[in-house]
Amino acid sequence: MKQCLANAQPRWTRRKQERPQELLDAALTIFSEKGFSGARLEDVAKSAGVSKGTVYLYYSNKEELLKAVVKEHVSPIVEEAKSLLEPEKSSATLIREAIHLWWLKYGSTKLSSITKIVLSEANAFPELARFFYDEVVRPWWDYLESVLKRGISRGEFTDIDTEYAAQVLCAPLVTLGLWKRTMDGCCGVETNPMRYIEAHIQMVLNGLTCPHTARVA
Image (cartoon, rainbow, N blue to C red; front, side, top):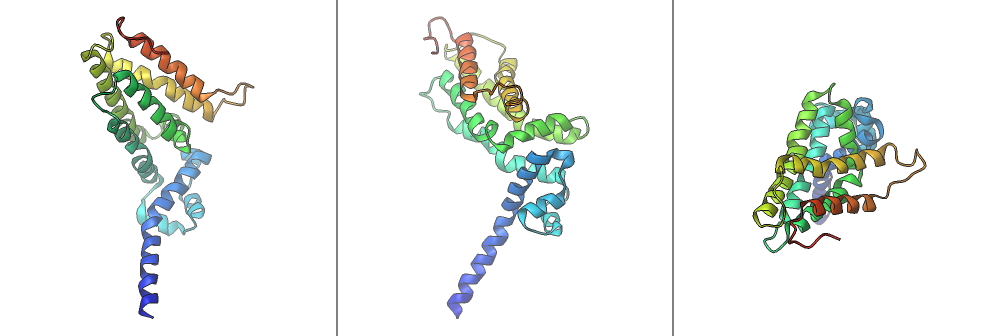
């Protein structure tokens, strides 16, 4: 009997501990399907299989819920990119790895709908746009700029405006993510993301590479 009670308590506790993650997963699905303005906390609750009141126990409004999704699923990606930084790696390799990581963990998933949401709702919800910039955009720009500066200091890259070059590195990825979630398939032309990304990488790195460094193939 004691053994049965001991087993029951951890099971209930685990269920309670898992609830915030279940709400975030449900929120991502609803935001992805309905956008930010169209999403309701009632929809999130229904998708998660809980009452609306349960959602309010964790998040006061849908702005806080979307912020939590970003912090849980998007913010860690740049930290993962930083973990790839090893002294023996070339800066070109780091750029390539960062771009592929971003597409694998963000651009090719439901998370990429967050970019569309933020861009379309920025004027109506400037605080949300600022949060996304501070939490996601700026850290990625800063990381890529640090890699570009590393490449210049090691004689791998030509001297360049690293601040704006970092932004230029990101812009085509944003375009790809938006295109795949909106126009792709509607125009009779389906974009191959891997070919797109590889073309982007080759153009960028061959433009950056110093004359004495092997060209990127």
